[in-house]
Length: 139
Image (cartoon, rainbow, N blue to C red; front, side):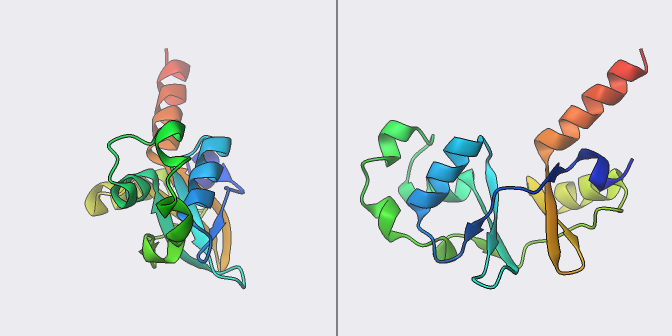
């Protein structure tokens, strides 16, 4: 099984100059916890997680009621919160390699790149879903 078999293709992305508020809106709308961050010319420059957002707002949980009215979320840029130069994986890499990278580096997601192009993202949830499918098919 390769990364391309378990990844989320064409993930939602955000620009590095967008606001934290925009990232929270997008995560809420899409139902995700990680967003690849792009430069204005479309190159991957970072990754932002819901954990990064919670830390910036000093909130244990991100609930719409708590961040929607906070002016600070509109003033903070993604560039100041993101993890720059994220660890990446290629779509044809074995899924086990993605798991290894995530465990060794203690991260919850990996952008999936084909050359210079972002083609997907693989998260712990994607890996758990793949594991469930495999265990159900072996029954």
